[in-house]
Length: 87
View 1 (tube, rainbow, N blue to C red):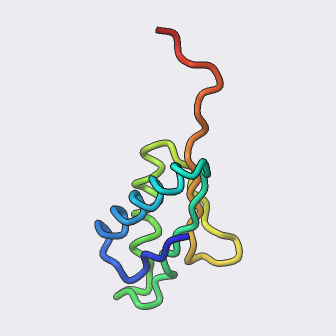
View 2 (view 1 turned 30 degrees about the vertical axis):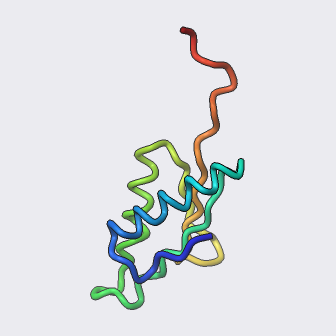
């Protein structure tokens, strides 16, 4: 897991991308990202959760908010294709 709450959105995305590269190198496809609930945000709404979800879904990742803690997003890398594409 990685804790990015308290960071600015661009920093949080960069740090999450770096962490996910490390996760993929280990052969895993999941990363828990602690984004916070937004309690300390100006309007009480999380800025990081929607930004992380948007950034990663654009690249085919599955993003799920933890059912036990809305301040955590679980990222899942797309599965590699079972059959390689034709040349």
